[in-house]
Length: 278
Image (cartoon, rainbow, N blue to C red; front, side, top):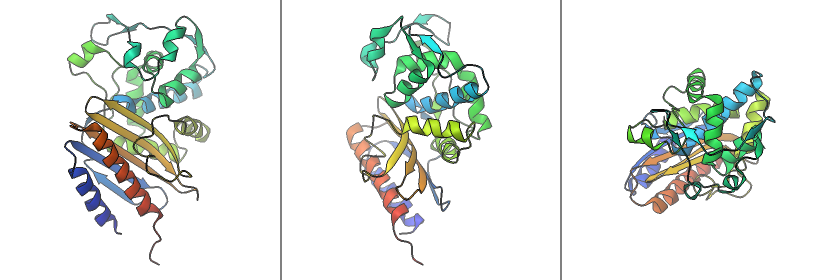
């Protein structure tokens, strides 16, 4: 199978679904890449939590704080529009346990962990307040991700109403995951620590869904209404790695779209692992 044919097959598979899709794939061994709508903007949803984690590790390495520092759990945040207070609704959060422990302390590391593996919005907002959304975006620019924009935490409804949303492109997420896979974000140890967290992701309906059990995926999903994303690093048992980003918006049938995206992930896996003509 040629890369060109693979791209045609993936485009055909996604065209069966009502909605808009983007794909960014890069084989870190061969350099093969496949890009579809890679520069199109998407609401980042929870994929922005990976850039936030990167900023945490960057600031920790700079000595601004320690990942073992304790933070008091609270549920009150300020809108970026007018600094008015808002609170998160536990029923709208994929992680509900933290809400039962407001007023207690948790380490910064555990908040980052919950932000990634269970996509905790409460943890995310506390972490973003600590590191500053503007700095997250600046760091993305330094890493070569020119379109990711992290403006705010989650559920800031005043900002949402004004169209002030976190956005991303498939290409930008590919750029940061490639650097992470190569140990080039902050330093090798930090990159490895972040991959280790991403490997424990609890939402596995897209990239890993149809892959063999011995294939590991260090990834972060994101979803809001009519939007389903997945992005990360696929680690094969033979040590090879590739980066895959699958983004979608304007979906009419989310479950079917997720299945189609999982099939695209499987198509790419088969391409990467197919015996090459010598």
